[in-house]
Image 1: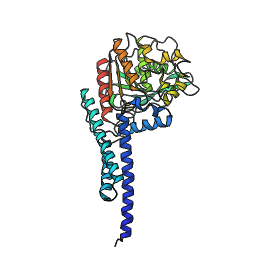
Image 2: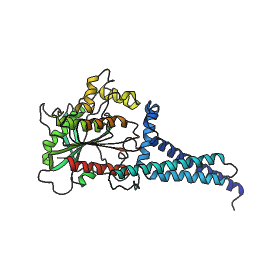
Image 3: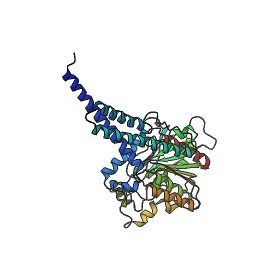
Image 4: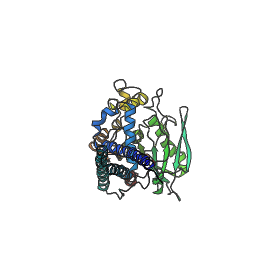
Length: 412
């Protein structure tokens, strides 16, 4: 028989477990929802050290990846708090406040989820708000083959080629050059939300690498030419892979978005060079460009966040006052001309790495200059907008549909 002492020990153990679970679920839910709801300018003070900025980004990344599962986490915290409250009628203060906080967090999850669903619905897209089916699943894909693009300096540049199934059209497959992010100094090619999806709809994807910046190598003027190397390869060896050099689009995420825009615009006005080709090599013209949460405006970013200050030092070599010409070259607005190709941009309003207000101003500039463009904001989403962790979230599915529609309209 179970003694009263053993029963008491088990009850205390259960309460400790419930309390810990409640604190974890409720704490995560409340902080994650606050970061989605509170305007980014109000949180700038949290972004002044790399540690606190990374903490903010991780909370937002996890929230956006979990999607509808945030509601499950919130309900777990609420149930634990209610059980604690009801199990100790004589000690109500802590369980009461846990229950109240859990209720507020759950309401926040419902509100932000509904707002995102309405926003996606307003885009005319058929996306279920109940995604993902499971977190960290849904976007993996492997390349058809890995190819060598050429040699830039002493670095051999490679890329993963994803080909559609079946026979290629007579002119070859239209091709999307995919450019990874990573603050210009980290990251590598690899499966993303588009490498498997676009080939299923008739587009080859060339997922490229480029030389990364470091504390001793400032790549502000070489990375875009590395993208030029990929265009030269498409026009040359790419023909043997059934790629159509007359139907090229660039697609980049974060810092890769900067390179995608700049390479596309410079190809249009014939100022882009290839880092792995002889000087004067003619390059194909990019017909459309897609940029996800792109760092299109680097001038002055060091005044906002700690990670941005590192980008200033590593990628550009110092602040704008020291290198105004370098920043003029890296800022995408510099390269806007009447020939700039149609540009799709999407971003989360809760981005704590690439601030949305800068991207919005760039989109407005495109409109002023008469450049065909579309700018889409996802309310409350963090940097990555839910499409960076191999998870098919509602926003990732929405972005894929937007990208496919843009390519079908504008890839030439």
